[in-house]
Amino acid sequence: MKRLITLLRHGETVTYDARGDFCRPLTEEGKLNVQRIGAFLHKKGLHPDRIIASPAERTLHSAQKLHKTLYPGIKPDITTNADFYNAPAATLLAAIAALDDDAKHVLIVGHNPGISELPALLAGADMRKKRLFPTLKPASMVMIEITGDWADISPAAGRILHLVDAASVAQDFPWPDLDGKEKRKRPAYFYHQSSVIPFRLGKDGDVEILMTLSSGGKHYVIPKGAIDPGLTAVESAAKEAREEAGCLGKTLEPPVGKYHYLKWGARCSVEVFAMQVEQLLPDHEWEESHRGRKWVSLAQAIETVKEEGLRKVLRGFKIQPETLDTKS
Image (cartoon, rainbow, N blue to C red):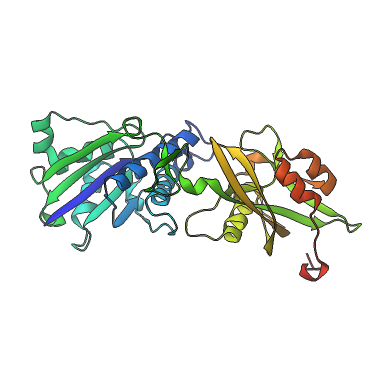
């Protein structure tokens, strides 16, 4: 029986996070590089049936980003193993040996030095023969073919099939899907987005809009993001509201508008929903609390946003009284 195991080091991360090492997030380039590896695996027809990751933010997010590229339209199915956090190679090897034999291709997302040392325990004989001694860079992977059952693995049992890093694979992504002939600077799902207008009624009954700083901290924006695989547009909009603005509430359907804008060398389409804000999360529960947020009048929001299409949606923004929760 031939089996495959793919070892992936997480993408590039920020060097410091006040919450500690466990919470260090991926950089934007780190996210993209992991997805480039995902596109490479798809092109080769190599789709893991099981993904296991360290629960640290950088490894789990790497696994999620890779899954979004490999399996568009499907919610990520990823197992975390607490023992994988900064684990030595021996710990990872023990987990692999304990896998059930139904698993044919397992992908593990982990940390150095353990993830780089593990190939020697799985395919040491082949490494010496090929004179390969990998130290995996961020978003690098090694794929090893194993002969026999997981419980029987040994340094002589494996054969290295692929050893690649993000710089050695295609930098652009196929469009309009994974088998498309056109190329884009981001994965295809990035170009289908949803946005949410978080609002409340002020004391005088006027509409107020919750705005948050852009990821670069240069100007205030309305929460917006790519529609995550496996989510509807409205579900993804609510997710963006929670992550970017730290707010929860009732997201109203149908969308209040749509618009387009140019980014990453192509046109992005955006569905815009309204959310009546019911709760603002405290900073320790708000994933992107570094952004900051503020309530502004509708007129101020129209003046502030950068995209003309969104400005047009805001100019026509009206809320039907019967859709409101008057207790909020």
